[in-house]
Amino acid sequence: MNDRERFVTVCRGEKPDYIPIFGFPGAPGMSGGALKWTHRRLQETGMPAWVGGSYVDWKCEDVDSWYRYWGTTGPLHLDFGLSRGTPGIKSTTRIEGGYEVVEYESGAIERQVIDNANVYSMPEYVRYAVRDRASWEFWRDRSTASGIMPKAEMEENCRRFDDRTRPLFIGASGPYGFLRSLIGPEGVSLMFYDDPALIHEMVRWLTTRARQYVFPLIERLKPECVCMGEDLCYNHGMLLSPRLFNEFCGPHYQAVCDHARAAGVPCVAVDSDGNVMEYAGLAAKYGVNCLYPGEVKAGNDLFALRRKHPELILVGWLEKEIINEGNGRMIEPEIMRKVPALLRSGRYFPNGDHGIQPPATFPNLCQFMTVLHEVCGNPEGEFPRAR
Image 1 (spheres, rainbow, N blue to C red):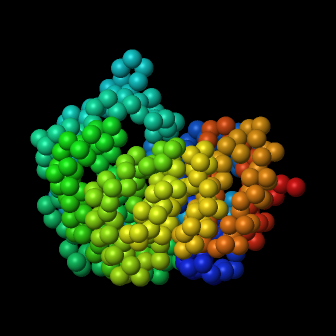
Image 2 (image 1 turned 135 degrees about the vertical axis):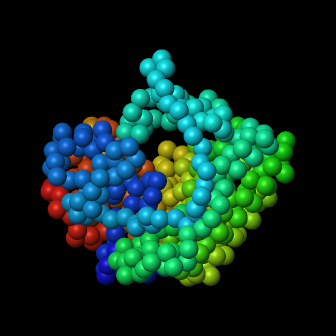
Image 3 (image 1 turned 30 degrees about the horizontal axis):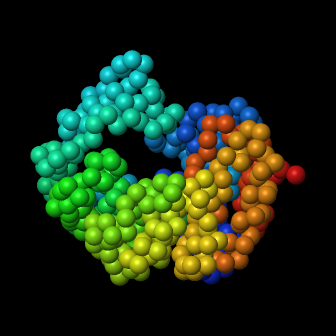
């Protein structure tokens, strides 16, 4: 089997030749490299210098050598889009008080640590882009494309992915994630009640854009996964009620899931941090059949999700901190308590519940990969097995 065939086989609840250690976008676990300073830490504690997978300014350098060395894999992504003639929103950056301040012509202001693309801590969102109808119309007008890639050019680009041996993921923005990024979690929570008409208008714009620029690619390429980024949960549950979800997000979910299903896409995934126990049933009602990353500290229970939703594709749920310095004793118990049982139930991609943290060490990552590869019957990887 190749990676594409293996991925689809797991999604269908069937048995592949071995279980891939697969990294989903946005939360790749231990599979898809690390931020620059974390990657450097792995090298300082023993990882060979030639192993790539370092994210520098959000771009990953030579992830294929990471895949080869650690015996992991990940998706393909499109390197082109269909929209043309989007004006865009300009920004300026300055250093102030030891921080980097980014100010956008939409009125949004962000304050973050210097070199945040490589350190990554959550920025402080001083002011969001959308605060009322006027600010939404400003943002919308500068974010709306005026044209689309000609069909012949689209076909030429698509042909490059026809003989793929790895699964292709195509993104379709999630409605809550879209709203939260523009209005902020507090602002959107109030706007659901104060100006529901504006929220509906914003989501319709998002769905229209998906129909114009994403759905044709799904039809033509028939990807292995259509993925929405949401982050609509926190450590106790959803950030909006089921009623609000159904009213404001449901129509977009239905459109994306219906289109993916019509194209024969085996996996419609949502990336949401936090506790997804209640959300899982709501998303499944519209056709979502995969959730990740299964954050441990948020109180998720993938055993309970499997019992309640046997058709759901589950991902992650291994505590990322177990490969940090001093935590090596936790690695085998964490894997053995969860992974064998979930693999027996099927439709499970085991991995860490987010990316690798700066305190990680090479010996601990070797131990993690050794145990996980053995449990998965996975023969890949050049890393030294820990005994």
